[in-house]
Length: 327
Ligand SMILES: [Zn+2]
Ligand SMILES: [Zn+2]
Image 1: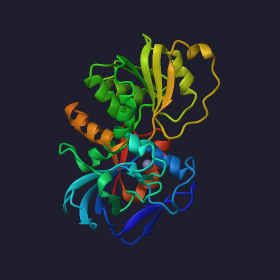
Image 2: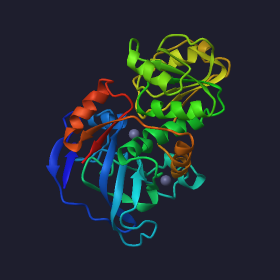
Image 3: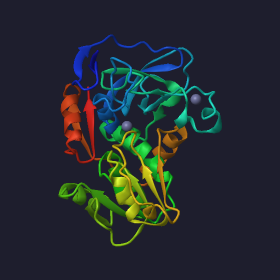
Image 4: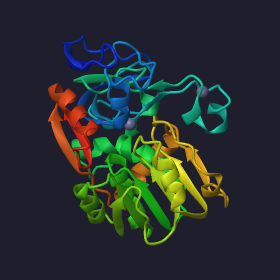
């Protein structure tokens, strides 16, 4: 099969020919129909995340069709369409797994990082960690739901009672969560890179009530802010626009250093927290909510061989919505 492989971080992916993987007990073999390109893939490729399997096939927003069942799998049948997220496996025994926090598992497997992912014609996945996908989405439209949507939704859930919600970094996750929040009656304030008129117009079209530059003050204080951009300098900026008791959620897996800031902008019971990974329950919830909220995804499709170009466009902030690879 054709696959795009990362041999060493910092170098481009290489198109190689690999044997079609064989599903082990409890696994399914999937024919990949589409795979989203997530910012986390960039962090893997650029070496910000330090411990990838090497070589690794990236990609953790896989939409695939079940091609073969491993021993003991009865949950799916051949031809079923399923989605594979970032959380590929958990131990089931550590204190986090047994307390309903498998997103924090001590011995996890992550798709496209420690387990080969979807930048390929085929992939294997643990059947217990994949999701059936809602029917109203095409393969390429469904792909960004699997990480941008799902981890975005976990971040949103942390502040779902906020009426006035700021979103920093208007990429794939923001474009999905903005729609969910607007559907639920929130006033969404979108913050884009200074001068990025496209991103601001895009946000307004998806239900934001205001769009401005990061660093700008919105017309009213906010109850919460979610930071999707990997930029630590946004944390104090977001704190400065929060009302008392407000929360800043850092949604990304990697962020540049957070600069020192005066205690007074945290005072008033403001909080900063991160969100790590996802649980399978997050996935099940979100894949119900997305169609109910009428979420549409905007995608730019690239052939598999152009994974490096897709990653470069994402790095430069040149993708509205999400990039998706099709083998
Ligand atoms: Zn565990
Ligand atoms: Zn991701």
